[in-house]
Every structure is written in C-alpha cells, then in structure tokens.
Length: 315
Ligand code: ADP
Ligand code: MG
Image (cartoon, rainbow, N blue to C red; front, side, top):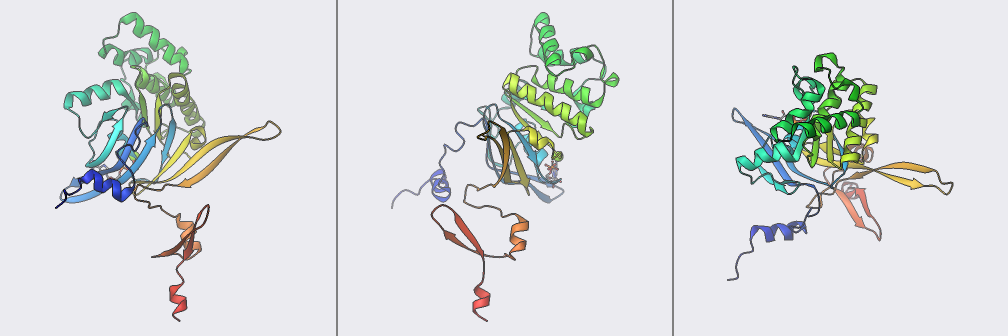
C-alpha cells in the first residue's frame, strides 16, 4: 500500500495552495482560528481568517462590533494566542513561540496604540518622558533617547508639547504621543485598535495623519482598526471583516487622465478564500432573490452567477 499523503499534502490538494502562501508578506494570517471558552460556552471569534499585508503597507480593518477585529489585533501583537491556523508577523511564528521570544517580540517588533488614551501613556510622565520610556527598557543611551524622543514628537506635529503631562493635553495630542511611544524602539509593525474612537472627526483626522507619517517616514507596516468611514480614504487598502473572516477589500489606485489630472479610484473586491469560497454581498443576493444555491457559468473573462430557476421548470 502506498504511504498515506501527509496533512500538508492533503491541504495543498484541497486548496490548490502550497506552503508558499504569503511567503513574501510581512503579516500572514492563514486559516486563522480563535475560539474562546467561557463557562462551557464556545465563541468562535475568528473562523478561518486569511490576510496578507505587505511590508510598509498601511491598511484599515473595518467591520461590525463583535466581528473579531480586536481578537485579530491582539493575536498580531503577541498578546493572545490563536487556537489554530498560521499567524506570522515580521518572520515570527505566533503559534510556536517560547515565552521569552514572545516577550522580545512584543518589546521589539510591534508597537501598539489603544483606543483609551489613558491606557497608552503614564500619567505622571511628560510626553517626552513617555516616549523615552520604552527606549530606557531597551537600554538605549540617554542622549540618544532624548534626541529620538524629540524628533519623533516633531514628526507627530507635537514637538511643542514635549514637557506637558497627559492630563494637560487634548485627546488628539495624547494619541499622537502614543504613536511616538509605539514607534520609539523602531518596531517593524504598528497596530492601532480604534485609535480615534474617542475623538471627534477633525481630531481623528490629525491622528490618522500622524499614523500616516509614521508609516511613510519610518517605513513601519501599519494596521488600524476603525469605525470611521472617512479614515478609510487615507489608507492603501481597507479590509472588511465579517463573522471572523475577511469578506471584502477596497483598493485605492491612482489613475492619470490624459489631462495630467490624477484621480484616486477606489474599487471594492470580494475576498476569494483559500478553498475558492467567496461571500456575495447581501444587497446583491436579495435583489435577485438568490438563496440556497446559484448557477455558475465560466465565461472567457469572468464567472456568471444566476439565481436558481429549477423550481420554475418543474411547475
Ligand atoms: P470587535 O473588536 O470586532 O468588536 P472582538 O474581537 O472584540 O470583536 O470579539 C469577537 C467575538 O469574540 C465577540 O463575540 C466577543 O464577544 C468574543 N470575545 C472577545 N474576547 C473574548 C474573551 N476574552 N472571552 C470570550 N469571548 C470573547
Ligand atoms: Mg474591538
């Protein structure tokens, strides 16, 4: 009898995708699953989520409350461990990591910005001292710490608030200091969970501008969870999460018209998952009364989807 194919081989046959999936991406989630168990009840927060983010990219994650956005971000930050699947950030395997490596990962490779301004900063330290703090832990010399804290606060547009304490600053200023803290130790990735959630629209836009500058000037890969639809216009890509899976993507690209005018065009895509599944938008399926099954036809350059008419034929 021939040897049974191993699991990886079965997986490759089933999905048509080999182990090279996301080999060159900076953040890789492949069939990521997170199940919470509380008092005997299981909650499937992530159910086979796929996501690739390129190095230096800035993306927004959007989705209804409870769709799994914070769960995903906490996993990428090394704060929570997935139940199954693959999660790799900057080459680190988040499912298979010693406690010591996890600590090093959190200190050196990722920076985090929380929604609650009070959670990001120490209240008894000035803005500059807050930015210096992670560099102190990393053993960086005093003069170099000072210089870097100053230049990061300048980059965030709040150099003039360097000696203010959090209570003396507005919410938007505090969040911009928090971004400087997050990038102080030159992480590869910055993760922000609704960083503008407690701010009004114009202050939120300033905080987004600061994240954008950190992303562009420092080359740090950036993932932002947001409810703010306007903010989605400031990022390279918006990824929609529905029921613990990536369901849609909006890509922005620049098109140059004959007149020389450059227009940014946003196009919405459905995500095709590893097994070939895709989620049709509810508006589309209801407007054509599609349910249970549809008919597919392969055309030369597209696939057609038709409502099931088999019941009509039998009448
Ligand atoms: P979002 O950030 O998109 O609002 P979350 O990731 O916080 O969503 O939550 C996804 C689902 O997982 C929700 O149903 C939530 O109740 C559940 N959940 C999140 N964290 C926990 C936890 N620590 N224990 C049990 N259930 C949790
Ligand atoms: Mg959340």
